[in-house]
Length: 220
Length: 379
Image 1 (cartoon, one colour):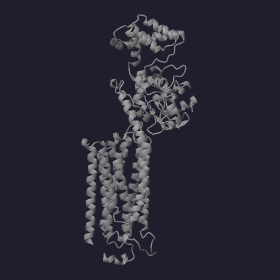
Image 2 (cartoon, helix red, strand yellow):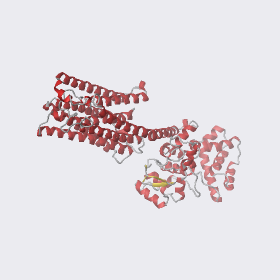
Image 3 (cartoon, each protein chain N blue to C red):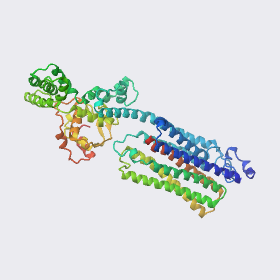
Image 4 (cartoon, chains in turn brown, purple):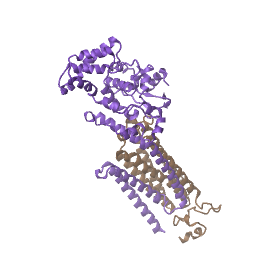
């Protein structure tokens, strides 16, 4: 901790959230104090996540508002596969775990492990997407398309929007990975990986809600 | 420092293990239902586990715990707005509809259940109000402002009584059977001439009068013989030209088909749900009067999609095709909707199975039916 004393002297106590992280761009930049004393990108990411919350809240609300209102089969209970969805939920949880490991490795300048874990996150994210593509194809073969019924429309828009979020996250992390080979990457870049991580974990918690509200409750 | 980092990794491992176990618990609760838990408690447990996972990820993976409060502030404000929207939507949209739909569905099922439902499918006033008002708690005065549902609704008992397969024959039959008169058939003919009684009543009397049995046997045999007598009575009525042919269909079947398939959307008395499902009571009769004799069976056989105007309100929904019903069922449910839920228009000739069969091979799409409707000039 003492190694960061010079930083701490100019830093608001609240920003010392990551012990032993001299690379944390908490408070001081060459441009002086920020009114929030917080890294702008991280604050912006949280604001974005708050707005994304509202969007997913509206999409889930719409799904539920039209729940049981479809006039024609297939109905949710006919097509949902809980064991499969549970496995894909596990996959997303593990990717979230690898994400914190990747951030942790970058913060201690362990670049090989950072690369390994980041690749792991992208891989597990892709596996999740694979499950989703499989599920979508299965549903369409069962006669459920996006314009087939209220269930089809609301379900595909909700899970499709989530899937697009996952895809964006995978591309973002792969970009990080490529960048680490192109130019030197160190703990100084941790805050950028951190916001990518925030986004990734957010995508995970949205799925936690969807898994329960859309899938599990259907079978209670 | 290194120890600190190992501690952090240890926390991450612990959290992901908890998350995995909780996810498995959620899966197990749903996959292997716990009867002792009950449905409500199962939902509560699932919600609680979901919230637990949510909080664990936010607090430990996203480091919101111990991070600057401004992050938490921004994020929770978004969460609060999202939750408020969600709760408002649930309160306005889901709860009333689910309840009304559930009640209507339960009624339809109890009626479909057959004999046991006779006389027992009584709908308490509060439930009836729930159905007719779509679950919204409006005062009587406010409800009066809504034109279609209240003005056109017929007493809920009407389809109930008609559903009882033996009601209308037996009631007619039981009377004369107690005081048997050999001149029953003459009475029927006389009624036709007088034109005061409907053909069904006349037919029933004729049938019962012709078989002065004991009450029980009378009930059993009334039906086929009533049908025979009905024909004669109808013929008589036709000859005289004064008969009102309002009863020449299977009312019990019509009501049963309606209650089993239609009430979910169009509601018990055919009043519909304003803005969502168009009313049938009265409207179907208007369509018939506007020349919809061909169009009405087509709606049932091929569905209907596209915007329509009913009593000043636009409905842009989707009526599924009911081709899986038999010709007889479609004909009788049409008659039920036109003449039971509404008032039969003058010159109404009940649909027969042949009328429906004539259109079964029209090969229309739901959109084509919409064009046919447009030609009727109703909108």
